[in-house]
Image 1: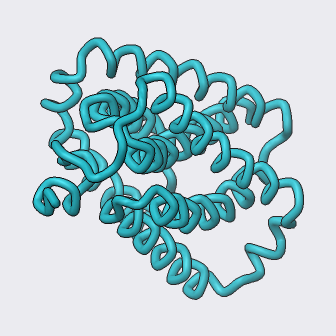
Image 2: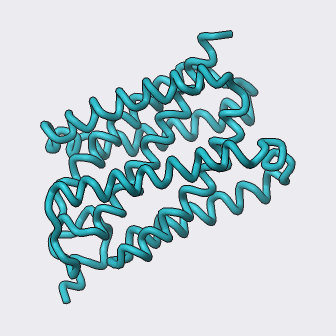
Length: 225
């Protein structure tokens, strides 16, 4: 067993215990896993009133949100079993769905659809760039991570100390997650093409896409005011 290669972070794997599948099957599996996550989120938005979520104590909600997300990320990053990775993926999809539910409830359906269309177009474009220039996105990964951390710190300070939410932050986050989409797509196609790695790659892309969508929706909402 190639313990050092298969048990570490999925995107650092150079060997695998799983069966290698074709490029088409690999991409199809990623698409189906992504589609499942979006379908679950759509169902949550349609069937769970936002008031039910906002009625939960914010401290309890945040605790459950981060616990579920971190547990899910741990599962799909460390597991070499596609079923376990898929379970971990769902531990991320559900708490993200609660956040999407609350955010989407603030906007009109046509604005949400416009944000979905723009997000889809941007994601496809970044996937193409990630395929053509994977080395470039790999080089800027450190800068993306540092920029995201800085943005989180600045945004928390703005909200809790200055009581404002500057619009420029949303544009910066959009740029950052565009970079993450290109990076995650590029590296997804440079690891062994197994079913487990397809699930893991889709999970990483799912988080990029949802964060991108929420920020684009927020930007569009500001423009409509």
